[in-house]
Structures are given as structure tokens and as C-alpha cells.
Image (cartoon, rainbow, N blue to C red; front, top):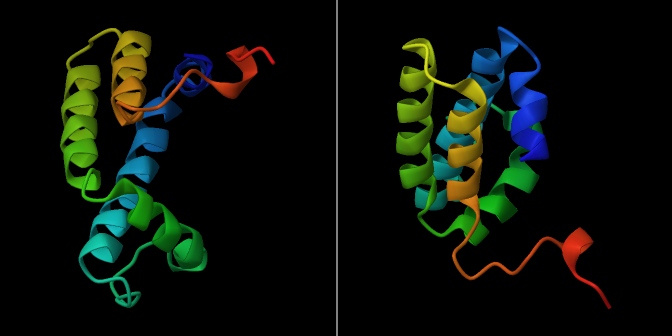
Length: 106
């Protein structure tokens, strides 16, 4: 939720931040389908990190990209930015993920 708040407090740049995320998800889809295909990437400078993330996402990039497109469309229709961004980011969390590390007591 803090990440969503930080994005939304950027004002009008929230949409720009989400469009950058869209380009990253696009690159993840490309690397997921063809790990060696860096020629078509937008974010070539971070390809090694994206390759590792693409392997971990295991096909979820397509659904995330579709969700992000819906989120951007809803924001443009004057929906509640923070709530929309929070819902999108929560959808990125894997179902089997445990609580955030900063909430786990040892």
C-alpha cells in the first residue's frame, strides 16, 4: 500500500510511472517467451535482471499487463487512483506469498 501511495502522490506522473511499468511487463513477456531475444526489448539496459524476473513470473506477465491496462483505463476515467493502483499491485503478489518480511516477527 505504501508503494501505491508513493505512485499516486506523484500526481499526474502516476500514469507515466504505470506506463513505464507497462514497458517492463512487455519486456518480461518477451523474455518469458524467448529468453535470448534482447533485440526486441525496450529496457535493454536492465535485461539481465528482467530475465531473472521473467523466469520467476512464469507466465503471469500477460495477466499483469492486462490488469495494468484496465487500471490505466479506469484512472483515465477518473477512478480512485490510489485504490486502483493498490488493487493492481496486490494482484502482482503471488498467492502463495507469505506476509511481508517487515511484518514477520522472529
